[in-house]
Length: 366
Ligand code: MRU
Image (cartoon, rainbow, N blue to C red):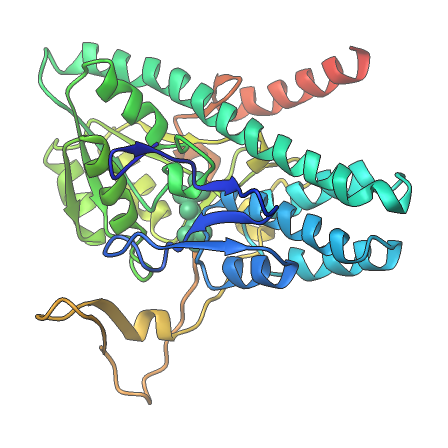
């Protein structure tokens, strides 16, 4: 996608074999690139959220396993590196999914061929993610265009999104943002309400992406969404997700659930954009069973930005004795989701499971 006028992907292989990613902790003020060449560097980048977003952390974890096998391709190290990487972040299922895909693909290969085979699989995972997001964009564009034609008589379509589910969170295009980019490119006037998404402020990344692509957007505090929907200023919500269960419970960045409740109350359609790598067929009840990452309270205590002189600065909001809890995700029950926009079409919750079974049967029987 577009960054400083050039088309880039969020992750690219370098000639050295390392991967180049953007350090997302520095955005939007600084576009810093970092290269990852070892399993430990990949693990650190995922934990610290230098790379973030469910699909992207899956790809980075896959490369982490590649680097681990390049160092030592024994069964023992394959198992140990898998275990180390899978623990880096618990909620987004793409991470475990990508690691399993690599492990299954290489575990029966001769030890001397494993690293190269793993690299090939990591490349395929990255390529497929970009293709999936592009397809999500096309299906989502049809959804946005229909709502725009039905509701807006030529006026701008107001879309609300939460967190960052753009190209920075994936390999390219994004999930929730892909339909928005395509609508904009197709000449549909679209305006985006960008939720700040405290405490990590992923909304800053979303606004950065949208500005770079020329999509009109307005940044709002997380608490503004209900008010905007009540006033009729939101035509549709679209968000990404980190894990979706078999019955369609959708786990996404903390605060998504509140937006879904407000959308239901005000009859605003609420879409979840989802590559199939985010579907967890092993879980049914998302509220009960999806592991929710609890992150450091310092993410709530501290606010980061630039000071008056333009230098990076952090300020603390709370005295040290103040207890803080920082759940990073929440679960939106299936009944609050209008439909899921996937690379294989748009499905309601029941249709999602039916499509999963249909696809599995098709793969089995050719
Ligand atoms: O904690 P993060 O920043 O890694 O959050 C994950 C996300 O980016 C979102 O929840 C997103 O909406 C889904 S990923 C396309």
